[in-house]
Image (tube, rainbow, N blue to C red):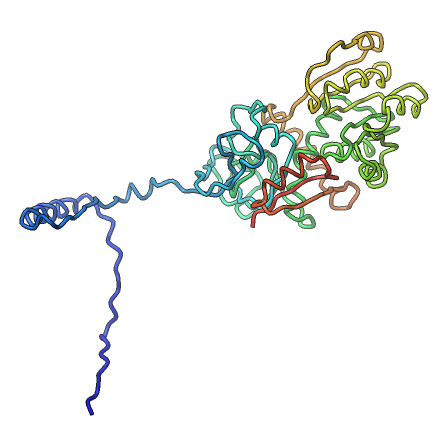
Length: 396
């Protein structure tokens, strides 16, 4: 009976990767090409395709790609949102850090920008998102203060937060408190900095005065109502569109009273609550539809800051007489268009609140958390305006 033998080579074959050629090896390539050409002339049925190998410099210059949320067609409704795996990775310039993002916040401006109606500042990338949390991966040139690679941070940017990585000024970063997770921290910067700006820089809030926050369950007003209380407001009022929001505003945020703009004449109710005086300060995101009522409910020498125009920017048949007779001051304000020096001062104020966040004196309310693969659903949740606090997306 015969025996079959299984032969094993003493050394296994190794499939070697071709060496990246240098300039000297190009001559060898040319010789091979000439020999191959002669061979093809004799055997015309054989086709050989030659591709010159990449050089070291070619390989070094290849772009690095990351995933980021993009918009098909540049602008559109939420069904145009998708995760683009071929987004060039940002590079850090002077004074910037590259942060690997763990979570980012959804804001009303993101909806407006997605639809093509938000005037972007010149330094903003096309990628949506202005607030985030994550870990510092690297730095560009320049001084970066107390930050180092590996630090857990959160911060504010001109754009680009809906992505795996962001290039952002270290001036706009804060160290993440150990007791607050990445998801919660991602919902702090935009809302709390905007509320601080409106309350202190624009309105010049004075202790013992009363204030009204419209859209009382929005991220900015959730922050603003709490900041008004600790700043010594005599009364804090708010408006909202559902009973659960009214209950949230009074029981969780500590507002004096909240009124349903859908079922109540909120201006008349506030005048009754204040004995006919009205309120000293008003923070408004609604715009056109509230223009007349804001004047009606404002106290003499009252101040009104306009942070948005959700109901539209036109006011037909407006009566402006109360602006004159009550000596009212109405001012519009945005945050994203401000320069880094202005935003940096607000960042420093926010840093002072960190002990209050950790102690629970100031509360961060996160309404819903979505994996970023569900970005369309996250935008729908914002558009439905049912949230009590922030909407956050996480990146796994």
